[in-house]
Length: 283
Image (cartoon, rainbow, N blue to C red; front, side):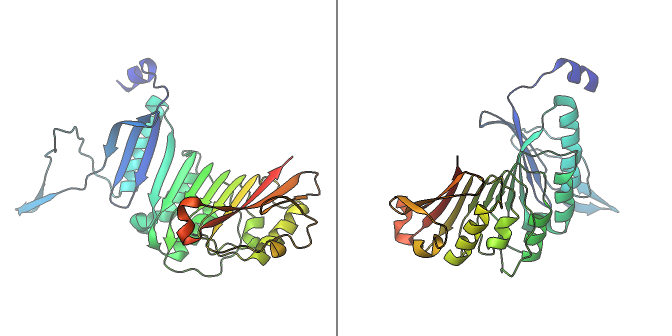
């Protein structure tokens, strides 16, 4: 039957989104943003003990189709099912969502799988409210396989973090209070958005100076979302910048391109003083 399906069935314009935790997973099939089907793991329900055996419920809710399968962990289960889906339907995962609190001690296995040839996720979303900073830091240092990496996880505490390379083409970090100029120099991303940033104007100025001499050659767009008023006298110090608009400046890089730096106030968040320092590299 598997050979027949592989030969006769063609699946086009469909995506596969995977949500993973320590005791659950869900695979959602979608077409143009519309969910069509889903496969999810439901933990066993133990009935009262009869003799030396536990009775396991096989009842389904709402007449849903189900398959009984025993795995040591949800992660092993999702790898097994995904391998079969990929082999039969040639449908790679388009988005992977993982919660660092949910995967617990399996986080290293999950990330190693992300990085393996058996897995290719164009988009990875990392969640985890008040997660371990050690786990958070390890994941950022070791994840390699994502084209679009979105880190919504919030560590319980922040501490000094050694600068390591991040290779995702697009990078979003929701709690970027740990990021300084040394981290930015090692980010290989084209587009970077750092929310809840606490970076200083002096740090940004140092980073802009490094851009003039060739650091971050892939960068085209960078945003720091901050809750303060930036000082452009400090930001533009020593860069021979020209003012091209209201709180918008431009200076030349050594490679002939220009760097534009502007201050954007997000209108719907004015009461919070949420602003953005946008940096664009243009021809």
